Length: 343
Image 1: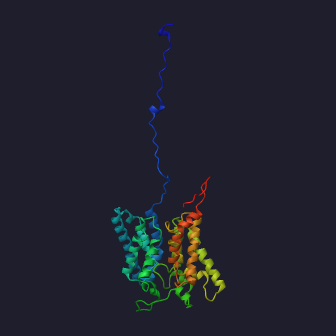
Image 2: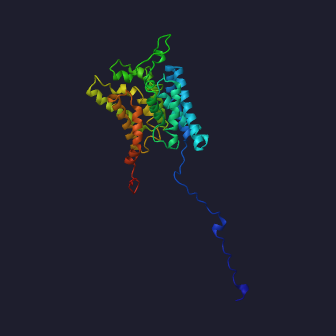
Image 3: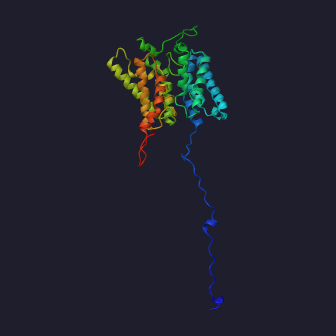
């Protein structure tokens, strides 16, 4: 057979890899899913949820509530800026709202008669000593606002337990007068206010803690929006109510019932706005319930048997210190494995 009679050899096809562009895979660490929410959005929603408390505070304590809130938030923002400058970081954290929320929570937990310069110092301490020294947002061990309040309790004990009556209770021509808080009245067996007055805040107390109804409305909005987890809230309120009920059943003449304790002091405000702090509370679902229950029990133990009529600040700080242990005890077992010791 001649060469002309032989069939032509087929031209080899080009590899597909040569035609198609090589795929690139991006390897990165978890998490791989991004949430729609952001830190500024969360913080400003928390601040918005405290608006009912602020409105009640302004109505009850007039200009004093406004001044305390402004100077405390200003102290937090200034401390945040100083910390960023010292650490060589950008000033972007001033706009994420975390310092503003810390200032609001701190100001709402202060007596309305407190000198503004003391409130300013509390805001500075809350950011510098409880947040910045640990590395900033998300790395602090203790709730910054409660650390600031504890510092003021140590430095200015008399000013931190001086209470004035709300403006609607004052006689015409009287600027201010001292007034016992409901918890102090209960501790001294004095006449107690009506439950309705406790709900609307028509009693003596801290700037933003007196109205249980305003705290409840703002807090339920945060839970509905899933900004705040319901577990620590339920833990705090259920545990506090249980201890108050047991004490009341044992001695009704000395200990008030659960409804009084749930609507007085910082319990309602703290359950929704302080115990739900993302950083101070455990990350596990069961851990958050345990955390909240521990706060509720400690609050009632301090109220009933301690030297202070109110114990929410101490309860939060104590449970903050136990958060790492609670997380370790409640860490879920991974699928197909077991939790290894971190020792």
